[in-house]
Image (tube, rainbow, N blue to C red; front, side, top):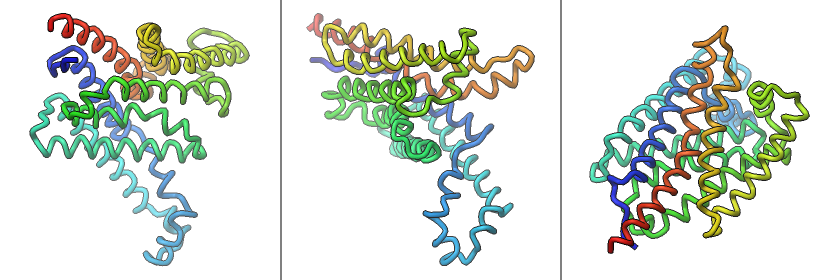
Length: 287
């Protein structure tokens, strides 16, 4: 089977998916907050180091103004890393080592962020895997022309999509406590009560599981990907719709926009695969 060119629509979708993750996380870190305290306030993990190596009492450490400044500047530094990664994504040249290093560093940062978000949610592993597509696609962009990815890109992306949707589904059906913002978005968007919102989420969760199966069934994979595009983009933009207040127009958009942007790959990567299927079919027919 022939290779898909880097000028193809599917590759451009991959590139803009990576860009959206990085620019969304840069927006979050530069204007809002990052869950850094989930790590740096872990008494069980860090108390021995802080008190016995640094010689600072734990209570003084967590209440220190200098420590707050450190976390603030660390968040800004990570935001700058993500912003730089976003810019480099648009001009990426795999032959330039520095660009590769920055994108890989950005991917590592996203991986650590996913760990922090999981830690903040009491180590619910689905919280980590919910972001697996986001921290993986920068590496896919960097190594796009490797022999391994040329051979396995489709199955890798399908696995990542399935993992993301199953992770969402576990929260939606109530395997883990249903997040309040899930319920809030459904209630605000559809103007329903809580019991209807829970039923809606349970149905959506079951569909997430079915998608994760059907995406690997040849005769059903295209339909599953179409649904993934629709639902992935819908759940992204729901962050704006569910938190929109006309009386606080700018504030509500500013508060929620970054959450839309970094989730766009949940719909864009399935769209990439749909175009890739079409491009491979055209390429094979021309051979």
